[in-house]
Length: 301
Ligand SMILES: [Ca+2]
Ligand SMILES: [Ca+2]
Ligand SMILES: [Ca+2]
Ligand SMILES: [Ca+2]
Image (tube, rainbow, N blue to C red; front, top):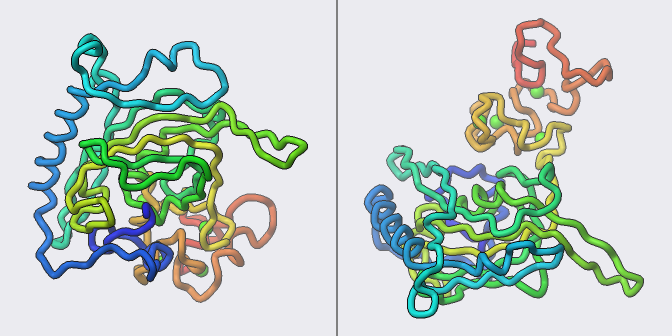
């Protein structure tokens, strides 16, 4: 379900939209006008802060944890658990921009909590990489609306809700070994919790047991990751970011509406990027006119 998003909620390239379509499982489309992103964010964030203040997770079980996965359990701070540390004291947060229908950018706070970091820090996924993981998605009242626990699944980050895409980048994958029976054992998974307002979740879409405008809580376990080169031009998708802001979704050198990471001819000069990247084969990206702009991004070179 994570893959299915509303197009106008996210400035995704066409390819991302296409890959997110699935005729069997589309969000319920309604004719009702969508709510205002800024107002909805304020409402959702207040609910998330309240949730984080009144809930804890079983952090004590993670002290001195070994290689095995530990099930994350979230509960309310009350009764026997009145002295537990609330998650609000443990979460970290980042801002995720959402461009609304008027083209205005509205920052959304995403919270994440690393319960147990994975062993391969260098392989943390970027927002355009793929991730093999297990997860459980719940509403703030604990209702599970989506779950993938026993059979892990691959997600391409370009095609999931942006709260998930931005949250996953902080979690490192672990290790796997294949037994003689052909069954893989996954150890040292990155485990934690991602919490997001609806604006970087499903916003006005309702899906199954997920009502519209729901803040979401995901409990995740990262098994492995893969760097993507979506357009197969020899430049990793995360490096197709000439403005250097860490976001390859907003780079479209030739302004043809296709972001560079999905565009096989980034500068629109009729020569495929793969054919002008390194013509002399010296391993250095070519810049024949020496203007600091590599040939594949330079339409006049
Ligand atoms: Ca590429
Ligand atoms: Ca960028
Ligand atoms: Ca383009
Ligand atoms: Ca070109």
